[in-house]
Image 1 (tube, helix red, strand yellow):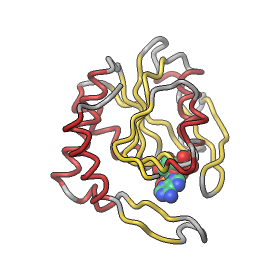
Image 2 (cartoon, rainbow, N blue to C red):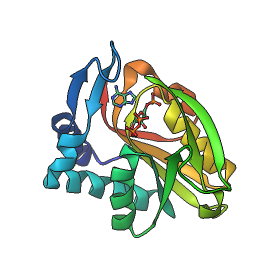
Image 3 (cartoon, rainbow, N blue to C red):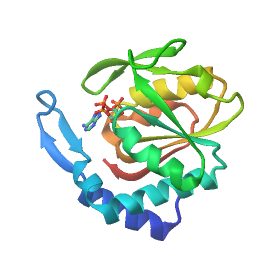
Length: 183
Ligand SMILES: O=P(O)(O)OC[C@H]1O[C@H](OP(=O)(O)OP(=O)(O)O)[C@H](O)[C@@H]1O
Ligand SMILES: Nc1ncnc2[nH]cnc12
């Protein structure tokens, strides 16, 4: 899974311009990467979701999964543009039973994700989308849930990877594309 060079350069620039750094949020020492400027810019938002949709098509994905909450904002329009289904991976306590659940740690705390196994067609190919890959705890939990439900994760796409937190290390040999990487 990769992007053509020209597309990669163009979308990386949109990500650089579209994220805002917020020091010491949500806790001291964390530089929070705020995606709201990109979402508020229709040209940038449209271009990025087009790239995500093209990756879904190129990987032969039957569905795009988004991780609540910021992942939903990217994955749902990408799925619609690609003409495939959207599968929500939700924070715990939101979905009615039966659900599959994973507890995980992220850069600033710990949480739990849940998936309605009935939404997943066993054997289906799914592309996972989120805004930020930091420690990778969130993305790994989402991939593991989808795989437990019987899906084949064709890859993970994030807009921004914080490479110094080494999130890829916990993702095994799953394909990962970051539209922009910060070292
Ligand atoms: O790589 P990690 O260290 O696991 O962190 C990445 C995750 O953290 C953020 O979500 P957050 O839990 O803050 O939730 P939100 O999308 O509801 O804001 C972000 O949207 C990713 O899902
Ligand atoms: N620094 C960060 N900014 C935004 N989202 C995050 N998720 C984990 N770390 C993050």
